[in-house]
Length: 216
Image 1 (cartoon, rainbow, N blue to C red):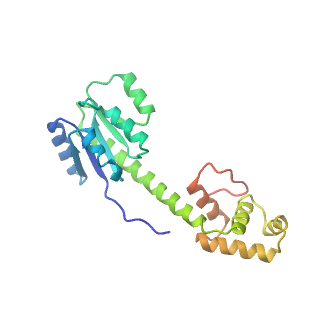
Image 2: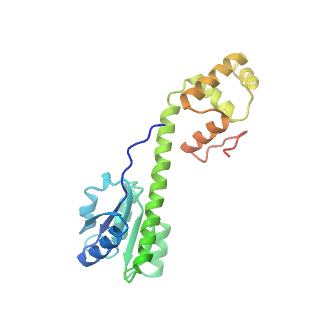
Image 3: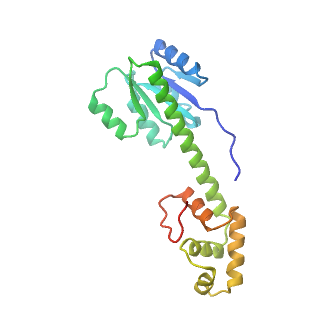
């Protein structure tokens, strides 16, 4: 499988208080993290489509749009970058609701620098993992698109646990022909066996109802 050029993770800092921006910027840069800062969510949203890797650190209370409203905007746009909300005002109910809705974490403004850095690094690690999984899904999907109709039929019967003899009987072809289709689909997918086939399918959709084989 080919891989896209990696993108360095960035901490996108969104806060209308320049003092908070300076503190968090220095904290992140002290461990080598790249930081881009914005005075408002609206300014950030102008370039949000190009955001790929890292995390967002946003103040809860900002004029015109709160950190939670920004999270809602990003969620509606299906942007898969974690958002950490810095707050000095939110109550427990607001925090619980937002966390259930997908906010990565809440951090109080009286944060311990080390604790905030741990949260930021955890968010970046999760984003990196999800980006890698997304890339694998995209590449696997492209590989499966190259299979012929017959190869797809053989593939589905293989993952259901059928032997080549049973596949041949099911499709009304010889065992030799079934074996050739199996070989070609393995070559196209760059895999060696049925277990690798299941793993590749599960990259696309882990909930697929596969029988006969399990990805070890």
